[in-house]
Image 1 (cartoon, rainbow, N blue to C red):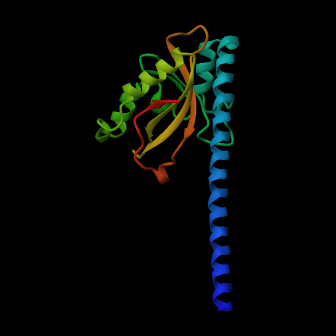
Image 2: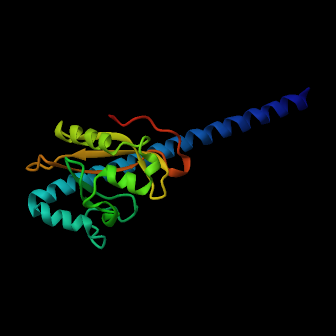
Image 3: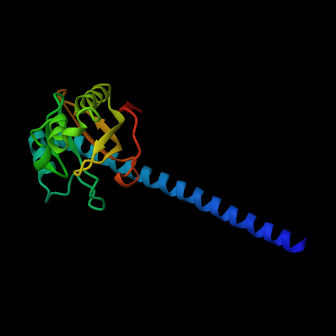
Length: 190
């Protein structure tokens, strides 16, 4: 009987250790997302300030210059700024300007993977971004694609520059990574 109690106690301890490890993993993931969120806020706010002081054309040129680190997180390849016209045309892209600038979100999606036509709506994403920017800015959660066509969930802060009501800037982070993708909900506002 004593051996049975020791075994049960050991199993209980192991279960508690496993549960604590899972809880720590959740805390770590939450902390990581909070850090990504803070970086996105810093990038968007510094871009808006720079547009006011340096001018729109200068800032767009710096965002599109991959050698310029002013509007990107040098620690994380996914920390960068993007600027869009309200009509959906990309004006600047801090990670892949050659793939995005001058094209609409819908164009990029259809050019990369035409099969996503009914699964990922670039016009809907752009409409959500414009509406959020014109309402004073905020966070938008939406589906996006990797260069290889994997759909995953992103969260981006979008704001409109003070004197430019026909455009918006954004920066965000992956809510799910392409490795752990599950079907994401339709784009929504926070």
